[in-house]
Image (tube, rainbow, N blue to C red):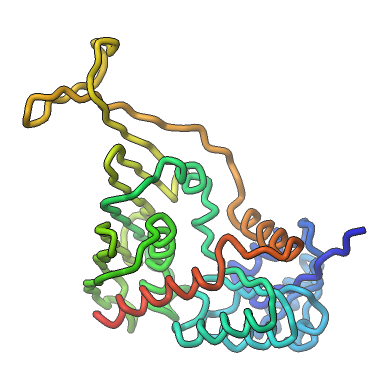
Length: 321
């Protein structure tokens, strides 16, 4: 007999509502939610039938797991409170406002032996999941994450709001220590940078170039990976990817083959692969993973350590602006 894991959502803003909707039909037992905006919460409770807990502690005392989707500035305090009660936590990115707080959360988490997961939703983007097998020892990575202005995310800089997704993706595909970071950024509308560029040099020789903007006219979420045998282009927005490969020309190649000659006269054939992608709901997938980790007492695919590492790189970038 399997006992359902009781879950509560903390923060019922735009993203909180999405989590609530998914959890209400999941294998979790959704107990209810807490938010500081009482009138908005009461309206949501009456419309959707979720139970609204005015008192955060009352919710924490009724659950086994918490999904924390409140503003970043509140993550540390809420996560600490939950862990001390032995409650598993799923925390929306960024994990906390700084790495010092993230280290405390991680240490507490290890002491209490609970499951902690960070909501880096792009790890569950079907294009990224499908392209992982094609990525091997990247030499150069280029990421662009451009968004139109939305006052919702401006409690943090564009690095913590947008670029942190790509920082996490790059740390995931290139497992190497960061050697050096150069960065520049500009504040245009907000009090913190709205557009930023960072160049990260890794100890294994890989270079990553990241650009993020929240004042763009069009949206773009693309990462391009260059490696010895291939070029992989991932479009996180359109949820697709393409692999471009190169090999020596041989006698079996047809006249239609795309052939190029290099500087020493060797003939190379370029060919494209656009593999099939299975459609998934990324937020649903990460919450299912969270449940799986709790049930099997296994480390999350996107651990608190991943959240900490991304924060450390983000801080180093911000310190240079």
